[in-house]
Length: 133
Image (cartoon, rainbow, N blue to C red; front, side):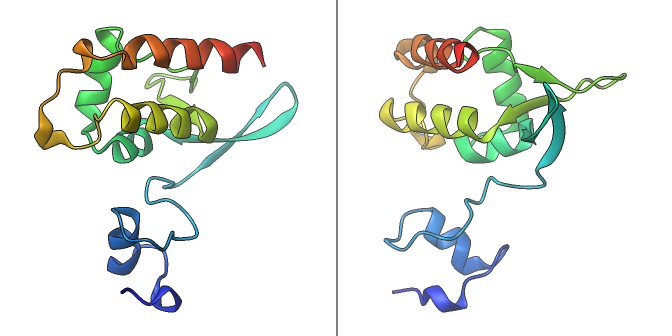
């Protein structure tokens, strides 16, 4: 068993814990470089597409392809400027992660087609509910 006292962000122990041991790390592995922006005058923490890709155990290109095919909703928030980075809230990422786990999509070696599951419909409903507040 891994000693939780020896875990720290970026350590091998944390990565091992995130992938299935019984002890949970303080912060999930996908919570990389949060950015804070004002939304309606309140600071909100956002994560780039790389955080979502890490959470779903996929590449950034795969997440972009899922968005193009409509399997996940378009990012609710984008940065201004030339790049227009996709930004996701922690709630959005955790919600998509939960839905992906329920649809058995987290293991990329399973090759389960996303379009053959209820994940896309549920992901869109999740974002609709979150937008309504």
